[in-house]
Length: 232
Ligand code: ZN
Image (cartoon, rainbow, N blue to C red; front, side):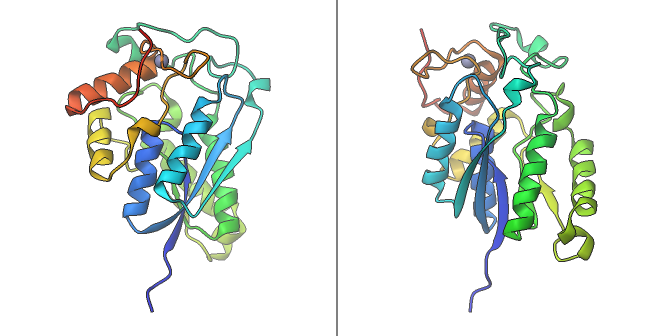
């Protein structure tokens, strides 16, 4: 009899990084349970992309959980704050931008941990990356190590030893071009993903926000055509 597959919870935003992370988890032999968080994003296109990506990958399950972070405010992604556009690469790489969502990865990983305990999945995957966004404190390896320790201290399964939680961050030290190259090898269909922070009313990417700029640069450096359309 074949061994039952290992289960993993994968945080799936609908963006390029999390789609690649989910494909890596699957190729590593995990039964993938995808979790998307409806955190009060100003637009819905990201969550629609997460649905498409989960279906294309054939995840075992996919939950979209609403948490109204918009009520907390403090981020250009959830509040009425302008998303920066046309920033030069050196400014994107520096400091913590207004698109930072307060405590987002801690909130997301905590929810993923709860789902992991219920699903009896010891492995959690998150597509954080410390290369392009050096300013995000919750994308650093030391943060991930601290959360992994917390996961094993904070849960019944961890304390009783039925599960030894591990937080996997396969992309953490990769450039965007490396992520796109690996995802392409794994058959990720990037036309299904959504990256832009400020799309127009029909979901067309702006091409000018930090996220669009990093995506376009990544595809260019990987020598692969970006399959999505941009405004203008
Ligand atoms: Zn954009």
